[in-house]
Amino acid sequence: MKPRLLFFVWLLFLPIGSGNETKATLQVVVKDELGAVIPRAKLLVRWDPASLQVEASRGENPDTTSQADERGQMAIALNSGFYDVLVTSSSFTPSCKKVRIKTGTTVSMEFKLKADPLVTAELGHEIYSN
View 1 (cartoon, rainbow, N blue to C red):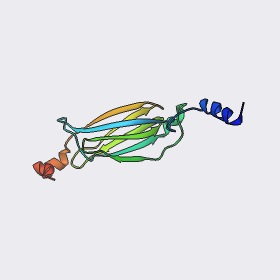
View 2 (view 1 turned 90 degrees about the vertical axis):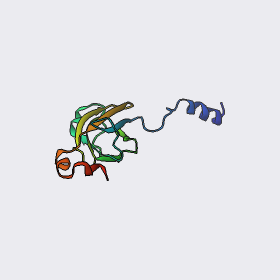
View 3 (view 1 turned 60 degrees about the vertical axis):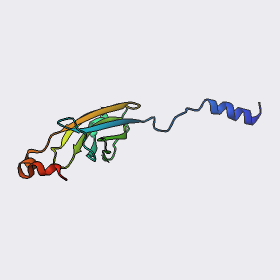
View 4 (view 1 turned 180 degrees about the vertical axis):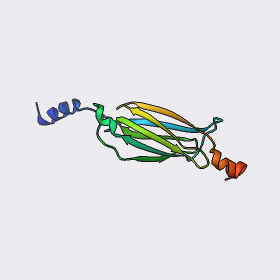
């Protein structure tokens, strides 16, 4: 066989992929207690060291931040492991949940934030005029 032909045969056996085979996707949607989306909510994803006990874990990950779009949605690529997911938005009580991410999967989470009673007591209806 010619070297060029051998090269193309060799290429056929290479794995094909985008390079994100070690990643998973976390999709988050943020709504208020009535079901309306909360645009521009902030998200903090913090890696949990318990992930080191998980065989597929790729080691420590830095904290990841994101912001929801106008539809209250966001998506983040993460390594496999356990994470704390914190969602905040102005005038709402923050919410935090633990999530397990596995390589090659998509995990969807929905957060329903409640109007914060401290802010509501002081500002009342004014919190919705901004």
